[in-house]
Image (cartoon, rainbow, N blue to C red; front, side, top):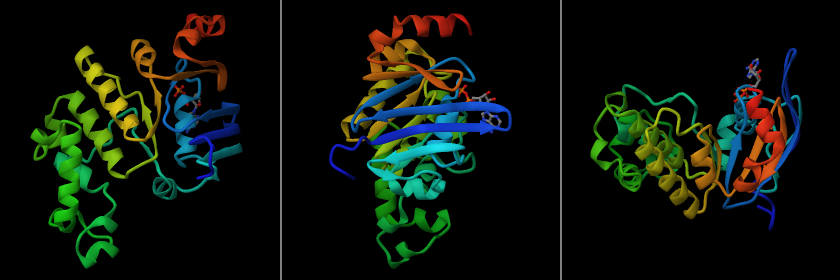
Length: 255
Ligand code: ADP
């Protein structure tokens, strides 16, 4: 990327669905190495922002710039290749694959050991590749999931499943990780573990943007918070400052 370019810049972004203005001329910049919180009432456009940034939606207007490079309306696979990974509000794990294989399928096959690294192969072949398996196991280790490697995800506690989803997103070696309500459904201990994991990801050099309703988590985890209401940004700054801004209090009381 360009020196000093933010990891993510969104410029005058609008996303309209027929009559619904989900985003209206939204601009924000996330510097490399930040943990950015995105908060706001339901329907304020937070997930739509992720859907545009990760290439699921083509914006009505505006630009998305990743590390100085315009990636507006690029396809999801191209954005994954450029370094954007995400999780979804509802888990999207492969229920018929083990925890290890859920991570394995997200690894870059060009890092396999054999000549087959140039081919797209079914998971059965990848599974036998020692280099990929080692890398999957290293990721499971890093996220405290080694003990669950051979389990099907649906048999595991919800907090563990969420962690598998993050491990799988990290398998793509992203530079920018988008987390959509990662604490939803987690208990207090699981939220604390999640915060440690997100901090370790940032310390590893990945920029993180997290949509979250758990304000306690946002306050303790995020370096900077952007507040959405009705498809626009109504406040932006350090968590302690944003929490007491009149616009924010008003937006939440009016929910
Ligand atoms: P949030 O994530 O803040 O809860 P969303 O981004 O999901 O909000 O939604 C913002 C607005 O855009 C809502 O009014 C929602 O109904 C609308 N919206 C989101 N996605 C679509 C879609 N694919 N088609 C039509 N309307 C949508």
